[in-house]
Length: 178
Image 1 (cartoon, rainbow, N blue to C red):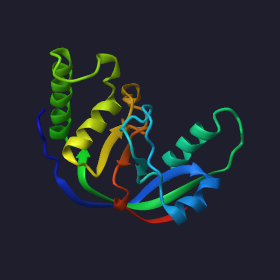
Image 2: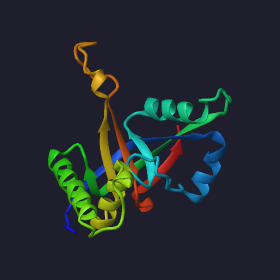
Image 3: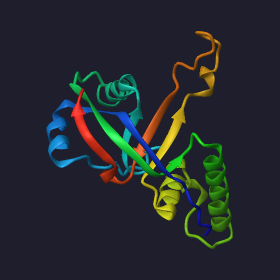
Image 4: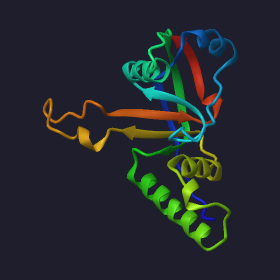
């Protein structure tokens, strides 16, 4: 399997926001975050933050925890994130590396050189495998659905957001409630 290298970014994101239930805040502040490890996590295993957007973290928490109208209290935490060895998907070169990696994984499965089926090759699967192979600290990805490309408000993509998945918890610091 190919090896690849992602740059060690010296960038520190000073305003990364994480939405959660209010009842989780004390535990997070005392014991730290617990990385999610579900196949539903789009960027794979880790702790998720919105870069520079408290509003998106709050929106996500409301959608996640109050979708059934439970009225649960949510909270937003702010932290500093050191990107470190980052699979930064704002960079076209990194997108190309992951596209090539995905094709290689599919080819290896097709040729019997790797266990698995095409049904288990999700984005999360590729991100997790790429993160393990490259020893990535973080994954950073822009989001904005294609249908949001209208010229509303002078063409500004108002739904655009940056998500950071932190895989190495030591890259999270200065956590506080906002």
